[in-house]
Image (tube, rainbow, N blue to C red; front, side):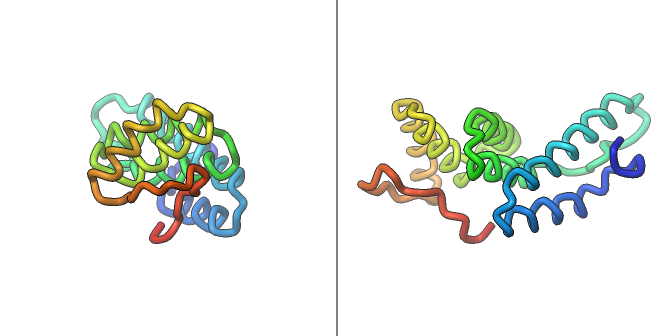
Length: 140
């Protein structure tokens, strides 16, 4: 592992969040990518005798990663990260919204309709007539 043989998930999340808040989106993504690489290695090394090294879900970290990818125009990675969030938290309206906006930004407007409609139904999105609307970052 890259960080003293320990995941330090919370600290790494906080560093990534600080980088994101400073508009250093690629730094935030790198920090989270390193964490997920280390997590995968730790899970692969587990012989079944130990508990999961994280002990909880990673949807929040994947969502921050998706947002960092979106803001740094890494749209295919943003899409993958959004889908990872939705596997763990299919009722996450913001993840549906971000997935829809990512697909729109990639020019895949027909595919974006489903996630945007789900975001609307889940109550975190009101459609606008402005096709260039940005994803809001309030509350994250």
